[in-house]
Amino acid sequence: MGETAPEVKPASPPEWVTSGYLETILRKFEGDKDLHVTDMESTPVGKPGEYLASQLFRVTVHYRGTKRNETDGGEGSAKKLVIKIQPDKGVMADTMDGTLFKTELKMYGEILPKMERLLADNERPVPLPKCVHVSATPQPIIVLEDLAPDGWKGHDLIESFEEVKPITIAIARFHAASFYLSKNKTDFEEFQTDLFKNKHPVLEWMFGNNLKAFIESLRTWSGCERFVEPFERAYADYCDRLHDIYCCKTPGRLYNVLNHGDFHAKNLLHQFNDEGGIAESRFLDFQACCWSTPAIDLYYLLNNIVHYKVKAAHKEEIVSFYHAEFTAALKAIGYLGYIPTMIDLQIELLRNGFLDILHYTCFLQFRFFDFTKIPPEKLATGQVGNLGLESEEYQTLMKSLIPGYVYKGLLE
Image (cartoon, rainbow, N blue to C red):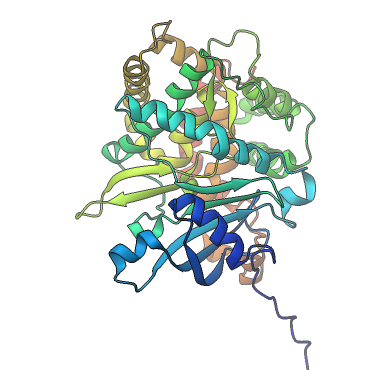
């Protein structure tokens, strides 16, 4: 008789996140000193360690208060919250010092409120999660209003130019606000990462292994033999190349903005119209924010939010749409200095095109998996390998792109 697998208990909020603790922060948030929490229920979001930089919980808080009693007939109210705490297990918790969570604390506690006020006052609002409470003590915690009850939902890759417009507007305004604030006594240079400079081991997990697998596969693709050497050179110093992209002081840099830095489909929520199309979008999770080239978020937008077929058909339109909104937002804010031109933006995209290559070689391949070829036991444990590299569709796509990478000098 086989051994019974140990029961995995669901994660729960820390013991100090009590009804009394939530009552204190809700009194301040609601502006009601007579508010009393009567009950709370919590549910973990995901498995322990699944989220890299935080552990999430959904909490429903039932309460009564003077202000609410006037409108709820004395029945009491319920508020749904998302609580984020620094994780004690997982890839990032095991290898980092909590830098990512510290970044998000500063974003919710200081930077996002500045941006939100600036943009709203000038009729260029950007939809951001409403922060109920943020504090580094007794332990780092962020409490947000849960967007799910209002119909906000996740979605896979965006598959039309029209549907990418809402999130493009949001990130353009986010960038514009940071650009303006940087010229008005807000220092963003602390939003930097030393992951790439120090060649942190997590990079091998995120980029190195996948890039190496791509190169090995490239050796076998008919007609691509001559491209192996340029990719090998790039693999040898990919950490240095990434450091140059993410560093705010890289020589030749035309301008910086505050990047979201982890701008992909899983960090977006959307509202949908009656036809099921995306009507409004917003982004979450600000632990990877980075003061650097706008190419970082734009390549994430083009490669990890937009379907690759939409990028192929509308890349220049998306970039142009972004720049027009970036410019309009700066003008609406009242910025009177030099506004980066479309040529400036295109130069930044070209100079930092290695990030585009990494997205397509390291990440896009996983969109072409034939999951029927993966043994169930490996699928369950995440040991899926690099089967996407065997896809004829993926190989055809990459064969059409690789010559451009080489001829533009992106692998030099």
